[in-house]
Image (cartoon, rainbow, N blue to C red; front, side, top):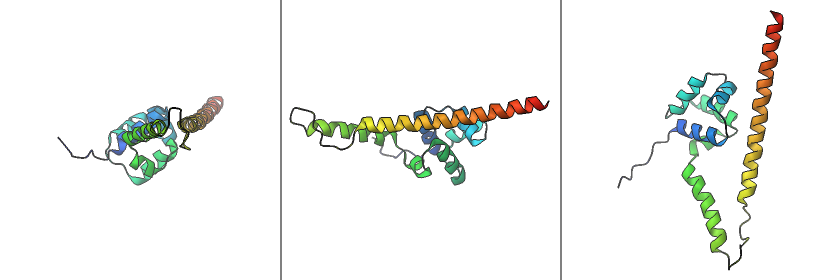
Length: 138
């Protein structure tokens, strides 16, 4: 059995968080002011510079520390443990022993995605307006 730990591949974590946010590479690239190919290279990189990580984190709506510590396995285990504990603590009926409600967290994530979408939409509208002004000048 191989007990070696996986490397802390920041690029993969950025990619997964971006996907969980429902964001395409093109949208992230636009917000960062870089090309989609550059985002692809970032996501393939095991490490990235701290200032670039901060920029990416800001666009994704998380902290750089959250990206560094992101683990999909931990997130899944967290939700599974909360779900399992709710049933194991019950005496036949659903126990409300936990103050954590996964649906509340899901709704918070939906709200965050909505805000991110609105920011991206506003940025796209600004770009269209700017391009229209450029065309009018010609």
